[in-house]
Length: 345
Ligand SMILES: CSC[C@H]1O[C@H](OP(=O)(O)O)[C@H](O)[C@@H]1O
Image 1 (tube, rainbow, N blue to C red):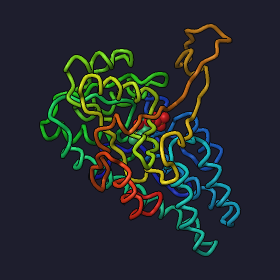
Image 2: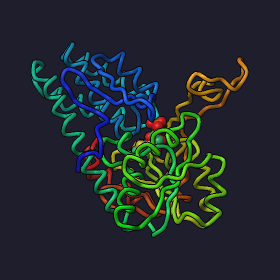
Image 3: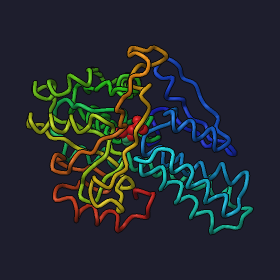
Image 4: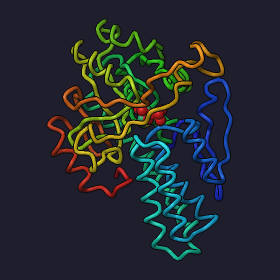
């Protein structure tokens, strides 16, 4: 199934993306024809979400190959784009896989091959989301769900990962509403996930991040489901900052906490969560938003964009190729052993 609405378009020689930094009040599309513009769009989260960043990484190679299809230029472009947001493993792997795929072609064919790779990548993403949603229904208990950040169409180009599970559960009559944390400091939940749920006709209940533990303890939700940016081989998972707190609160409340993510989010290079690089962002993002400042100038901030939830707090990891339960090592190893890097299926 294609996405419920478009968020990205491959329009050779450019990539077009819905500028997520302007949502929900303005639907503005960006045309990206050079690496500098792509880097800025990724760094400022105009386009975001680990699975969709994989496509952006591949598109960076395609954009670079239009200008210079030489091997050195393509390799440099892949490495450069892959560094922009270090926690989301798929950004680098999508770029690297596209580069590897096209460097086997004659130089004059590489740009076209890269755009074809991107089209195939997007189609796989959409199919993976569908499979994740189906598999999610096999483990999700009936009842309302709490989710964090944005893991929908805006983050994958398909129906979403955790939000794809929510969409499927709602369609199956398994939940009446989805609770959404605002997800400070960039408000992906309050701005993006609520926007997606409203567009999909799914009742959304927004809550401050600070109310999440109380919600879990209140008995109003039967599960917490989030996405992931990088999953270590032991099941430790990096996701938007605040996820660890949700997992701790869910454990205390006896509510199952699930991760929903494509196999391409699993990083065989990370044995455990301590090996996952965590992106830190500016103090300005914490001291205000949208041009409004609420903290005095000169105040520093500790602003990790992600945190790591230990495998011990995760009830199951829902992927397009099945649901993995603890102990995660053997199951995750088996998944990555049979999947080309950068693709989840
Ligand atoms: C299915 S999206 C995965 C992941 O990406 C988001 O991070 P960001 O908004 O910084 O791109 C968030 O951690 C989602 O859970």
